[in-house]
Amino acid sequence: MSGKVKSGPELKRDLRQEAKRIEAQLQAIRRRLRQRLEAEFARGELTAPQRMVMGELVRVDGMSLKELSARVSLAHSTVSGIVDRLEKQGMVERAAHATDGRVTVIRASGAVRRFMKTRMPALTLTPLLKALERADERELREVQRGLNTLERLLG
Image (cartoon, rainbow, N blue to C red; front, side):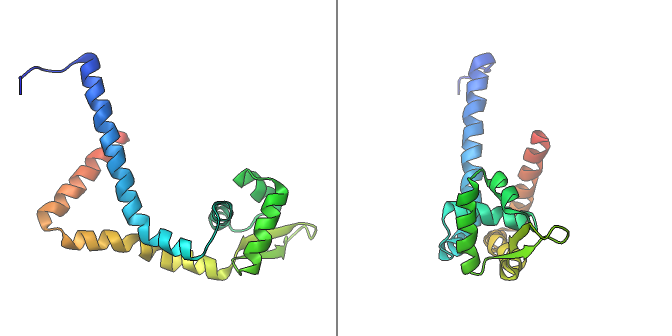
């Protein structure tokens, strides 16, 4: 080590490289945490547009086809076809709007809502729990300290 203190553009370049490394690590961690969940989703054999539609229907409990089309930025006819296929698979349900019988409300089925409420958290937490079980007390403190520091610096 030369003992030279970095400043200006050289320091910014080093920090940019460090930020890229940290972002890559966070993405790798996110992928590992979601691996079991993604495998479960893959078994459902949903296309990317179907997953987008399901994601919105899980986030918002019921909406019209028009609202859903706007939320996923797909044509009304495309979303209508997606909803038809998802309904045949038992993943979505259609019902008349409570106050306007001309409007049909689309929502995730009870089975999907139960999956999202019970099974999904277990699929995402299990890899983290197993990793933390392998850590000793010092490592647990280090992980928490590092996450706390990063969160504070970002906030």
